[in-house]
Amino acid sequence: MLMDDGRVLRCQAISIQDWPDLNEREVHLLGVVEPSFEALFSEHPDYLAYWAKK
Image (cartoon, rainbow, N blue to C red; front, top):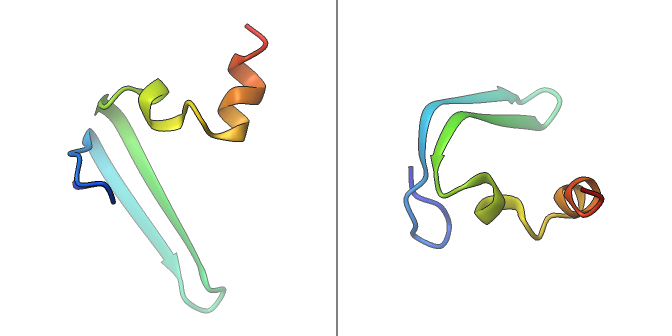
């Protein structure tokens, strides 16, 4: 799977769920191999809120 910046996202499984009547979508990535979780989410507010406390 390619990310928006062209880097390869290696993972074990991808699940895309689409509910057109609700105009909602979910993407689940399981077993992310690379890039690391930190590299993917280190600037996300939820990541910072949780990991900045550790």
